[in-house]
Image 1 (cartoon, helix red, strand yellow):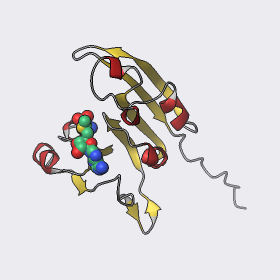
Image 2 (tube, protein in one colour; image 1 turned 45 degrees about the horizontal axis):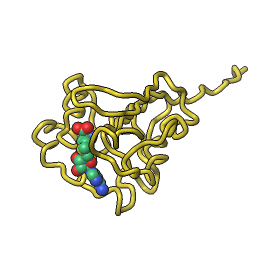
Image 3 (cartoon, rainbow, N blue to C red; image 1 turned 45 degrees about the vertical axis):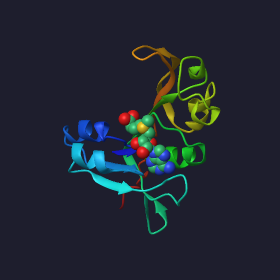
Image 4 (cartoon, rainbow, N blue to C red; image 1 turned 180 degrees about the vertical axis):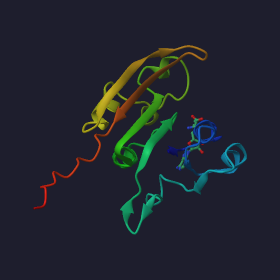
Length: 159
Ligand SMILES: C[S@@+](CC[C@H](N)C(=O)[O-])C[C@H]1O[C@@H](n2cnc3c(N)ncnc32)[C@H](O)[C@@H]1O
């Protein structure tokens, strides 16, 4: 499982407690190191540097990719492409309308209507919501979307 902009590591800790291997990336991994000591943590500024999750130039992919309360549009497709075949993307962050309730209020940090759906083209959308939540009042968009498993080879029986 990969958590992008993992913050305190709350999601890393949740998945790790359920025996999943977890990887987190954030520009400050100090809190995550405390809460999820077994996690693979990458301390990286993903807005000003190359994507840090690569092996030999190839994108690392994960069975689950989680992003919450974070938006950096230039990396959105890389985030989606980081979902392995058969894997799931869970993404929730603030959306257009939140500026009437509080922060963040800058358009750069607010998803536009339908934006997560568009970003997940190519994945199967399992659940999607765009609306107001309470405690604290906020407008969010959230999605759960899965990538189809890799197709199995059609083997011809040998004679
Ligand atoms: C609002 S917090 C959300 C944390 C976590 N996802 C959660 O929901 O609890 C935003 C996170 O994005 C991280 N962040 C902001 N800009 C970043 C950047 N350029 N590169 C990496 N992480 C960044 C911050 O350090 C912070 O942990």
